[in-house]
Length: 104
Image (tube, rainbow, N blue to C red; front, side, top):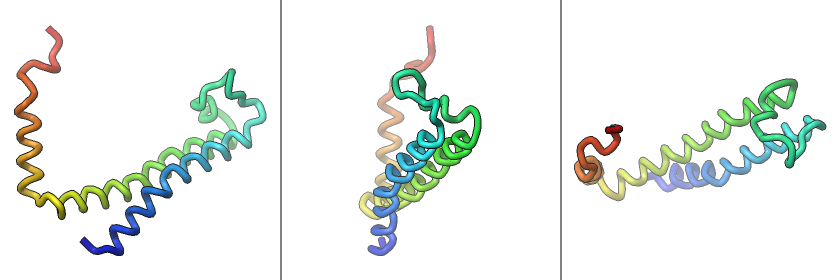
């Protein structure tokens, strides 16, 4: 794998929590009514400009995290090789007993 791409994906991994926390704290700063002891964070996504900040910050954080995850997946393919990754997945599915997830 290209070292520049690996470093860029690592940068996205470090950037993910920073973007998430900044967007949440910006939303909190725009909501004078918000209290850590009385409200849940999801209350920020209901009304006003703080809802725009909070609700746009969540998918933005997810998009940055997807860039990091794509780099990690590509790196795992380089280390394991695609056939080995498929064998590991097949073994993982085979180890779950039948009807494990069904309610009886």
